[in-house]
Length: 167
Image (cartoon, one colour):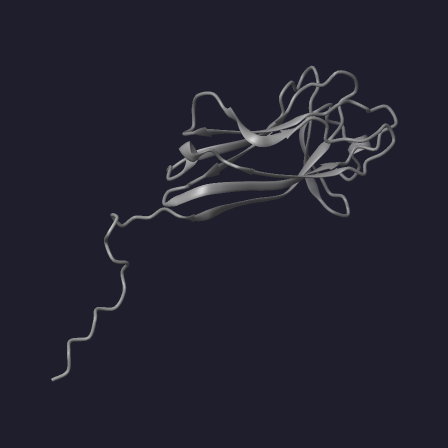
């Protein structure tokens, strides 16, 4: 779909082929909590940083909701998601009739997500009061602060063996 105002989908998750393409979320009474889920393998990694940009892409003259977006995580593939500190945006939109706001999000997953075979990260909105707006989720990036130390304390780091004395 090229224009968020002309999409036949009442709400949910959609891809818009704008000049800068984006996947977007919009809540409604029928799509109460549209979201994206990314699965990560964090084995041997710590301090996972999740970054993305939220883009208001809905310039409709009738849409002017306070469209909150939250970043959540869970370890494994079942059970409840928990909020990531620093991953909540109270309103990712402007309007009505405007779609100019870009909100960068950067948050570090809690330490319990370190060194796990499966961590799921969810970016979610919910049905807002009024006419919900399409919010793009763009430039998703995940990185780590570093590798976990696999050597016991006091063990020298791997490297070349010392040369025997000549002689």
